[in-house]
Length: 324
Image (cartoon, rainbow, N blue to C red):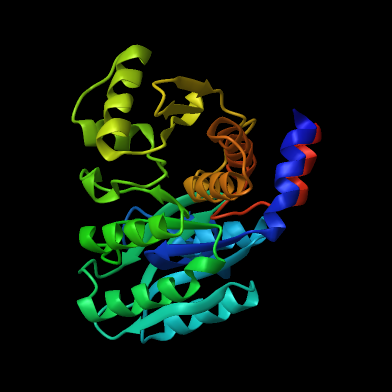
């Protein structure tokens, strides 16, 4: 089994994936704390350094690139300094940014985190969640059309920040079906009808229960409700991430498969879902089964949560873990 998984990872470098979704800039202020402020009962953080990394769909694209594949990123950024910084970072990581559109109405989403002694203390968000205009949607769609035949998969990273209105997502899914391209979606919100026809969705357990509007207490209930959702949305499968319980796959053939977590230490879950969906998409586009792809994604998630901050993993790290 180990050799099989390693052979799949080796195929990643020949794959090309389009990521479309809500793109963000993640800012980390790394601090020391040695006193309490005299102005209020809060710690005073002395900043040692500041790091900037792509967030949201940008982090998904970074995960795919770090895993050795070719990636294109589509979405919007603002006409602002944060947008300039994002372009610079993405170019540095060899992420194709031809699909990024500057939007005067929507500033670049910026999430600033204060980290002291390896612990996140506070996060400050700057964002505008209005839907993108029809004109912007048309520009993005035209870009996707131009790249479709060259792609192995489309990954939709939805953070409900306005890039992916329902009709636009359906337009993308329908386009992908014309060339038999798989569409993998990291969903958001309580309306999953907009994802109908995708290959698979990757909600966490809380998101899943929010969508079905039920409190589930048994594995049978989870399986039954997940199967209903798979049928209703015409999915190939549903992958539910379940924190310390690992993952559960519910497929179209009415089967539920549970995969135990691979995490040995957990320092930071930031971006773990992005690592899961990036690895899953690359494995599926390499021709493997949903179960095998999920096993790889589970191992990748176990590696990334052992790191602090929005992190990625390399094929070498994944192969080393597989061998061990």
